Image (cartoon, rainbow, N blue to C red; front, side, top):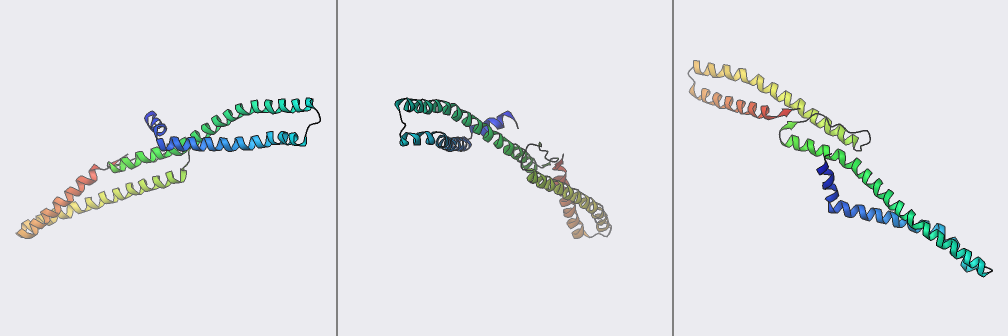
Length: 194
């Protein structure tokens, strides 16, 4: 994937918004669960009423210490979820970028070679299907070229026969047919097989 493609994905407002919402939502959910698991038992001890002011101070210190360690955890979670989301996104988008290159090549009259994915990329079944499609197109192109080549010689012979027999209408129709065969040959020659 080129640098401009990667920058385009980051500039995509829909992707950015979705990534931010997923990262924020996941981190918030993790924060709520972690907070509940860590701090709620300590708060319940307040309800049971500690026996002395010293125990109350120790409990408050423990809650404040846990609260202070919770925020770095939130930051670590935020960074790790963002990084894993970005890596997952790249593994999905990288093959799609290659697919788009194949689509554009076919649109432009070129049949590219097979799409090759890295072992870490997703969409391998889709890449196999795309490769099967381009291989089938190559086969059909070869068949069309062979069929066109088989038409050229008999058309020449028929034109000579019609000219020898003085059949003007048949000659005119055969010349039209020959022009169409040449146009087909021209179209087939414009398809570039990589």
